[in-house]
Image (cartoon, rainbow, N blue to C red):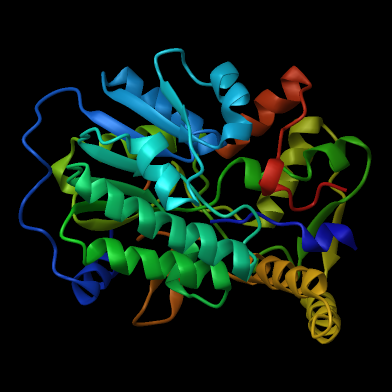
Length: 360
């Protein structure tokens, strides 16, 4: 049952604008008057979205300074463009963040693709909230006037620790007086690719319920990185909470599975998993978690899995309580099914990392 506990630590309509207005007044002033290239600090540069965002920022001529955990610096230098300034820095240590990261220098913008790895309460509040709050304070002292934050669309209906931690920092950013762009993407391609390998091995594609309980408009790393980078220059993206998905209509898990078999030229093999199975696992782990933090964390991971199994990653209409695909904006050109086709044609394995859901 390990596959049931593995899930992503993740996922501009009128309701989003209302949300912004309710949480704090927007800053009538834009970012500083820097014209052209800016000095941009990036957090979370070594993740898949972070790498795409660094590339997009560099393509636009910005000077990019990446604050990277010391243990990840070698990997960062191998995977990030040579033009990126990589600085070893423990972002959870405020003194290191100031001395090793910002170094008393001045910058124009802060872009964060940072997120907790597991979504468990301890991890979420340490990274999704506290690390960001410390960075925000130091950023203001460094002259930064604009922050672009990668959040998640699932915070619209917060039931989990990581969602509440993300919302807490969103509120702090909105109230900070800085120009902000809070980007809430829908599902990522990698988070929907965990079953490619199992299907290749002849196993059935797994869906919860009938496979139509949820839907999403997935966005690629490249398209999301471009969108985040565009937030620095496009005034329409300032002082806004920005839900964003990829191109095309919303797709259900069942549609994802059917298309995968179609691309493989194989008859579909779909196995339906009842939601009550997850409920039973959550109940058992929650009981055992009273005496074990490890099991408490597993219970939280199971709750995260259940959330993604039952909630769509689309804009939530607060008036009706329903998810609205038509109200979910789209950006970019990459589609999930083109991504599937490329992965299958090149016979490569997807490095799922924290995006694994059904890897086994």
